[in-house]
Image (cartoon, rainbow, N blue to C red):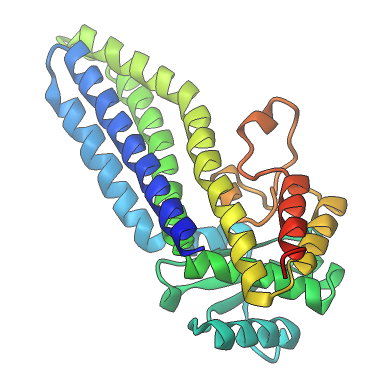
Length: 295
């Protein structure tokens, strides 16, 4: 298990480094095509790095706000609080803040920079649908994301994905509003326009590829960690089966944070499934049932 966690962290950071290098390469290409205007390259690199850094510190609050999460106390959600508290005592993990989203879709996610600053969010649909045993499996899964430091990487991915979209939008706007200026560099304007158009088209695809590559590793590992913590993989398998059975899009579903949830919060078509941020639930259930035979 510990080797799997280390491998997961290495692979995730390799993907993120590749993503940043790709952004830098696009910036270099744009600067060269615009007549060696290296300010374009510098802007892309500084903006992407700076924005990702800012997002690292504020993305958890953004994710909570986007989902409509409301902070709850032990008195507000005693059942959830008790289960999370017991899991934290068993694993030696700091008690995270708890949030609830008023939504009938059963789902949950964890966020935060470190275990000391982490939070777990569940929907009312999850609380209503699951038994205590199943709920423990799901909350153990979310606590596993905190213990494995998946939440830190998720925030960086969240920031980089949004940065790509903003870069595309800025490139298009700068090129469009500078066209009417006299004596401007028409070649640079054309390159900015082309760069913005390409980025606008590729940004969603690139974001989906990065999110899916990272999220699928994280979900399998968090499932296994939860099973080892609770010593009850069948409980999480049963919970995932219910999540699949009662699946529906979240009222405030957002593509940029889709990879944070334990189950896909968006309605997917056949083409969209190619870039799914989550592994198929039947595959996850099969793995957990195989683990159950070993306990």
